[in-house]
Image 1 (tube, rainbow, N blue to C red):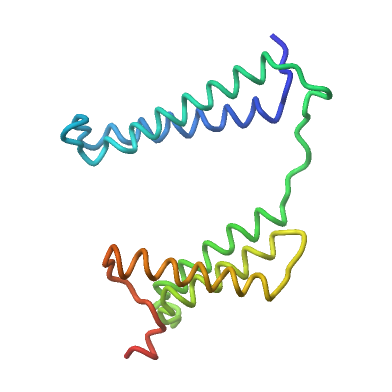
Image 2 (tube, helix red, strand yellow):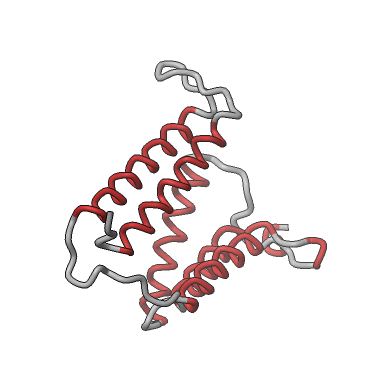
Length: 162
């Protein structure tokens, strides 16, 4: 059988592998049932759904004809680096690294850093647009996690809040 879209084929395989891994990992928790869900129920269902979507994408890649076979291009290293770096920076700023003397900077500073570092992954970088996005994300995150969900983690830098 001929692969008619390499991009879709390998993306579908990735979805299937990740879905199966999540579903398999969820089996180590209590699953429960629909009316009384255990901690493994949601990841199991999510893993099954992801694997099913992957199977559909792989099937489509083998059946649907494309013009050039949608070959896989070279890896986009710059976006990959900045997206991973932005998540690492967010984690370090949110909780700090006391072993290295880095204090917890809190949610707001972490969101701003995450947004600015992740924005470097794109083709264009406009400071004004990124600042507006960071502000909207910071306000939304504060409302969602601190106000509505009442999660307990630092919002502001530890040297400000004491």
